[in-house]
Structure formats: structure tokens, C-alpha cells
Image: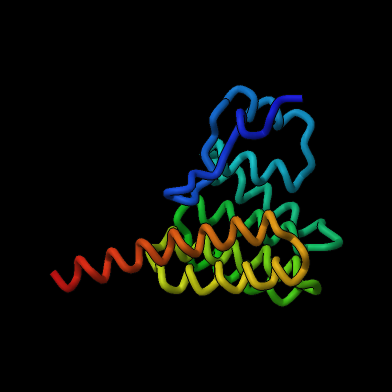
Length: 164
């Protein structure tokens, strides 16, 4: 089994998922779940295909929570913030555990970060951190805290440059 980090990783500076091994990522399409397919297509830059697959998944899904998140991710990767935000809000309403709410809050933070709304992103990451920590999810809590710190650093830099 190939190490996930050798196939893709989250860039700590941009908070974007980056494909490290395109051939291995393409190979995943052959035997992945419908949810994973939407995500993989998004990472491969096949946004419209990912969005179409995401809508098809959402129509047939008995539990739309994950389908909403991967479809939101596909929209986010194509810079369609409004659509992604609408789907995030729907997923948030379906989040029936702290961990699920934390997952949505973290994804909302990533979208806001992508939009350059660093202070708002930091608030969402902080919320996700608290939820993950209270649920005993230390690795995810640490990831959200690190994302919050990155967002605050960029927010403070932008404020400093505005004052100059």
C-alpha cells in the first residue's frame, strides 16, 4: 500500500490539497467509492466532471452529509464560493455529532481561507479545533489549530500592509 503522503498532501502554506503523484491519483479512480471519486476528480483539476459526479451522488445518497462536503470541495476548487458555501451550510445542518460539525467548520475555514477572508477562516478553524479537542480527536484538533495560526498570520500581515 502506497503512503498517502506520496500521492497527495495538504500544503501548510496555502492549505490546498496538492497531488504529488498524478499517475497514482488517476489510478485511484478505478476502484474508489463515489464520494472518493468526486474528491479525486477535484484534486486532478477535473472540476466540471467532479461537480457532475457530486450532483449525481447527492441525488442517490441515503446520507447526503459526505456528498455535500465533497461537492462543496469540488465547487471550491473551481472558485465557486457561493455554491460551496451553500453546500457547507446544508452539511452543517446535518452534522449530528461534534466530529461532523468540526469537519464542516474546518472545511468552511478552508473555503474562507481560499477566499482571502483570513480572520473569518481563523474563527472557523478555532471552532473546529475546540470541537475536535472536546471529541478527543487530537490529530484533527492540531491540524485545525495550525490552520487557525496560519490564517491569523496572514490576517495580521494584511492588516500591517494596509497600515503602511
